[in-house]
Length: 218
Ligand code: B12
Image (cartoon, rainbow, N blue to C red; front, side):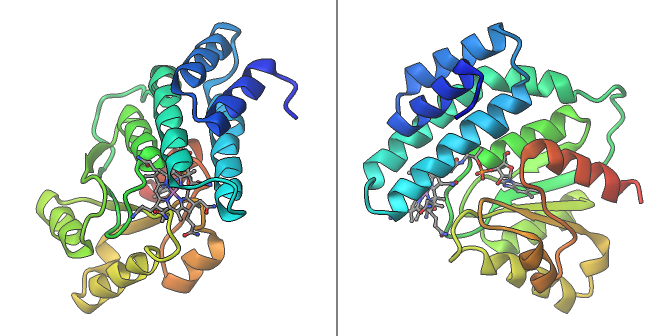
């Protein structure tokens, strides 16, 4: 159990699917100088994982997932400005163009949205295409805007193969080397990255920014 009572309250509010409580607990945590990254990684994502486990065990059903989603979004609205402030780039020069999307068949967007927002705050020009986006449209957009980075999010294991398909299409079109392809989401790990030949992943949005920084400046 976390020592910080505000973090504990955030986790509980997400598990209970109480949007107002989640927003209030997040507000109190910020007021007591809790690092916004701790709120995201040790509060919101831990709460989300517990909801997921209860869903897998058959204790929670779709309505509880939806309520948890609402609670996560409400808390995210409160913590987002502080998170973005922490990651604001010092120079306003565009570092790279990024296309981000949740791949086709998947509508989870809370994690992808915060990755997009933090990359924007860090000085990247991000085109966020939303959820359930066909992989061909993602490639077309990347070509159209001259992107250097493609960020793909998927939380469903059944959606993850579309990440591999996108990379295969890039290869077939002879344009794989033009792009840094990053993949992320609750079930994505290094093994998957290597399996599909992506360029990297990150467990959370703060690490996603670091990985993009590193790969773009190589
Ligand atoms: C809330 C939620 C929902 C909400 C989503 C609301 C929304 N607007 O997003 C709703 C109710 C819509 C939903 C629906 C479903 N869900 Co759901 N959902 C969740 C839950 C509880 C939390 C997700 C979340 O927002 N987490 C918080 C954010 C901040 O974390 P995150 O998304 O992981 O993102 C972070 C990192 O992964 C990373 N990241 C994310 N994207 C990217 C991209 C890049 C490039 C990088 C580098 C990093 C990165 O950074 C982010 C920020 O730190 C998860 C459980 C879990 N453990 O995640 C299940 C979960 C993802 N859902 C699941 C399921 C099964 C479903 C449904 C199929 C249920 C159903 N029977 O209908 C549907 C599918 C709908 C669809 N077609 O997509 C399963 C998936 C199982 C699997 N292995 O495939 C999970 C894992 C629950 C479980 N354990 O069973 N869900």
